[in-house]
Amino acid sequence: MERSFSCPTCGKCCYGQLPLAIDDTLAHADRFPLVVMWTPVRQGGRSFDITAELGITIKLRKRKLAAVQISPCAYLPPTLPCPELTADGLCGIHATKPLRCRTMPFSAYRDEADQADLLIPRSEWMCDTSPDAPVVYRDKSILDRQNYDAERAQLVRDAAILKPYGEWLLDSVPSLRMEIQKVAMKPSGGQVIVSFSTLIPRLAKVDIYAFARNQLPIMTAYAKKTANDPTLTDFHKRYADMAGEWGKIGGN
Ligand code: SF4
Ligand code: SF4
Image (cartoon, rainbow, N blue to C red; front, side, top):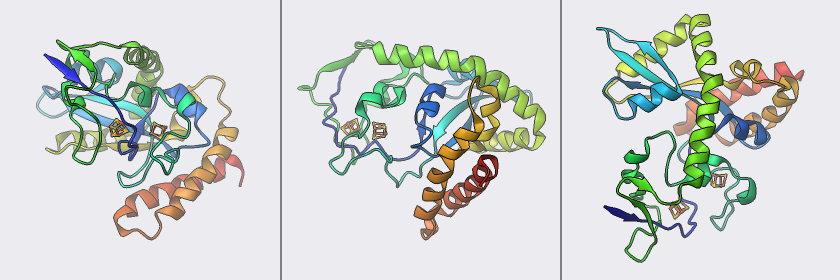
């Protein structure tokens, strides 16, 4: 089986939340509103094994397990574009864009053999999947694999930090474990959002005060941007809370 794909850079996939490698969060802390996203996958669900390998597992009822993906993330509502998306649909930081954006449309959060449906564009996306586009995926293998391999290697390195961080936070905050168990049991699944400030102490040589000074104006700007949109109330509250938290840490 062969799949063709090319990207005429319409920019339509540059909306909504963007999982980031830890190095990318640090490189772009003055750009993206950052959180840590916890996404449980129930045992037997798609990508359970790779999620458990890169993240942690928690017990559910009836001796079941959930694997939990722990991702640093640019926290954006699906209706808002990435702050670096230009008016003509291009990436404003193309040369330094995050690894996640470089690997698109593939994803190193999934096994290589499980990428085919990522090559099916959403209805409004303008990706070219016609036979005229280059073949990018054949017999469940990615043909140009440099970015996929780089992202997977980075996720494995990040797991060495995120796994002990996850276990530590679950032990420190029992309500978080209950919240994740609750989300894992929902038929539609979901995510639990945790402040990025919980992760900073686990990152070597990161100045939390400088980080707070980078995040404060971003969170404040997104709190303003979402203030009058009733569909974004949850996002607005989260941005406002995190602006308050970073303001306290940064000394404002
Ligand atoms: S950094 Fe660039 S490629 Fe990535 S989501 Fe933003 S605009 Fe798109
Ligand atoms: S939606 Fe498709 S064509 Fe548009 S930028 Fe994303 S990958 Fe490229």
